[in-house]
Length: 380
Image (cartoon, rainbow, N blue to C red):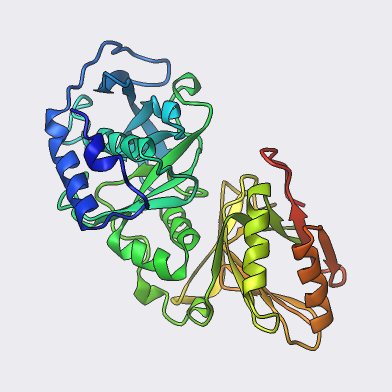
């Protein structure tokens, strides 16, 4: 049942007409998938676990776990979590996909096959050399995915805890698949992915975003609610892995090793007298974030419980040409209004990959931090 010839030569995360047709074909074959349950069992925290064979010849398998998640907004949600086994052999991080179950008309054994097919699609892409990583996405259009016609992105988020799924069932490192609806992808395209994920998290009061897909939910945000945003006035630069946080009086732009050369290249492409706005992603140690839409001009916070010691920022913009230095909270990020000499100092630090510390009095400080690879720490 392999379709490597169809899907294995993908060169981008988006699907053109032929690629979309292949996805439709693959998803349509979901009912033909040979799902066997040689290891059906009850786990300590899981009500039911089954192992599905997707490609026996590779081998590519998945574990499907039936469990519950407690939501502050919707009470106890019954879910299926799909955990891939075999991606690592083709250089791809394992994939985890969690979807809600309709307990009124679905039995626990009635799990949808679409996530299993999606695991196969990502596997085929990886075999063809197209790997997906954190905060990347695959865009597509099919008539029916998990019972909906308006799912158009699958976003690959960093691994996050999944309640009531035993740690022993989860890979050491994996990507969490988060489907987004058409209305949400329009916002993500124009105003940034993190803005959408933040509103998705706030809708369920779950930081940074809920790990499950509610197949019956409404869009968490629309472009109409974004009109008038400062992001319409600037072309933001996305640099993979770049993050910004506020902890106490410190506002830090954090640059992992993999992002250093990309940041330097982006800086050199920009005119020194123009703003340099940067899209940033979720930092592993943040415990809260910011939300913005035009229904309320003031940014709002959301967090994991009551903690807001380390707030994630969705963008950071350097804005030269001002008489004095000033850090300003704008929507769900910060703008650094800079005197020319300060901007020259920061540019030199970025170009030479040196840390930078600029004090703006007792209230705020800016730090450019170069992070050691694969060593998460607590942002200052």
